[in-house]
Length: 429
Image 1 (tube, one colour):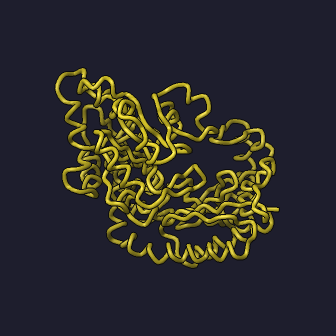
Image 2: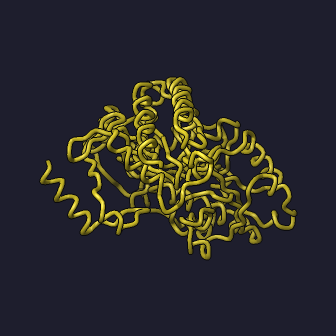
Image 3: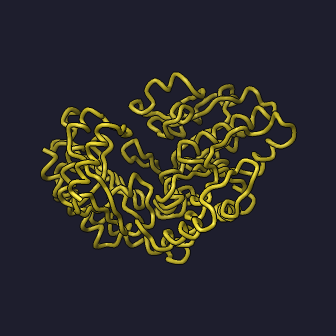
């Protein structure tokens, strides 16, 4: 495969444009070409094996080539790969919408709108929240509240809600009208004259992902729900990262018994197999779009409710039930915490470890507590060094993300942390 590997790399350098990537640096380096996966492992075109330490950009839940998920896609291919959801229904979408709604209390999130990825799930939610107000004649409620350092995707509307400058950039000048706050206390200090113009608040529950995996205080989510309820403001929860078991519960909001008005999911929805997303909302929101044509939600995608994606998502939910994934995950969450605590003891460069379920951020600093100079790109260096020790993951600045597939065993977790320890020792200097 070595000749093919060289050809693939040269074709990539000549024609591909990668996301979040400094292309000049990319073309000057030797990339990995990933060609095969099984369980928590990936292989490159040179035959080298790696632990998938960030679940293929936070998407993979049950491992690569899971037999139930593979079989679900093959069975659906024997029927049809894709049909339009505009003006037609399909069996798998009907079944999946019912299964997703059934994960929440009766009478809450009863409607499901399918789209393609996390960013479009957010676009759906904020557009629904805004049009809901307009359909009801609440023309003064057009503002949104988001939290500093939040991240909700890269399409224009989603980016305008984000609070991380390196990702939103110029987009903050466009899109939705947004007020950013740091915590619930800032909301509680907001005068009524200002809150009266808010349509919805959006939040990543329990933990902010792109903000170097920083956790919210316990009880914050419940307090936010109470604040919204008292003012008739919708709550949008972005569970694109945290959904489907990542925090130890099926959804992060369940830790504080909170049900939002809009719930956005993607990534783990199909176990990393297909690009697919869903926005769940209430019958009260749905009913506001009924009646005259002007109230219709004119939004959608060519691959909305793609049958292959729906089929594999259904199979993934079956795996959660039949393999008792959440129950079996609990000891591994504790084991990962133990392994990372040992890492901090042995590595003076580990400044802080922030863990929420099976999500961890390992922040690196110099032994004296000062940050590494930005130009050293220490986080990137450590992750690149980890390749030779059999670990694939990515940093957020100098915070290394460890987010394994839920299928990882204790032995595999130990391998990943040992590889990370070696990489920190060699790359964080």
